Image 1 (cartoon, rainbow, N blue to C red):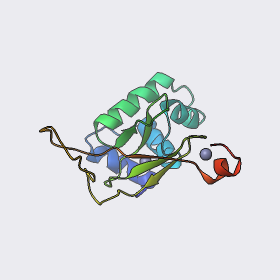
Image 2 (cartoon, rainbow, N blue to C red):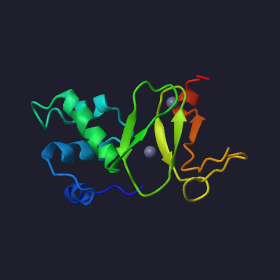
Image 3 (cartoon, protein in one colour):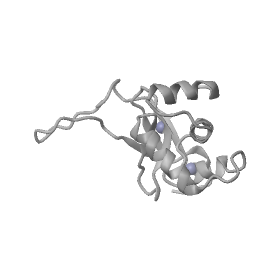
Length: 146
Ligand SMILES: [Zn+2]
Ligand SMILES: [Zn+2]
């Protein structure tokens, strides 16, 4: 997926109809540096450059950015908290190591959402297939886990 530079974030926020704030730009920059981060990880990544910011503020910003479509919330199996990443205009899926939790992006299996179609849709219109490839990363494989 494309990763916008720091200077692009104000335009990104304005394009989504959001007010540009230093805190929002820092949250977006943290997700550029650390994709698939929990709110706590984002908080830990920006608290040094934004003294005084509260964890609750970061949660609120992530919710606003998700609602505005700037950020995508990812729920993965066995991961207690939601993870966040910048919303690209792709429909990528995730490879997840079942041992250490490492997460990598992989391109959509077919091309565009919903990518995969079930054999029966029960009359529902499919929006997307949220595919998680459960895997073992090379390090965990070498360490003999699994
Ligand atoms: Zn691993
Ligand atoms: Zn991703």
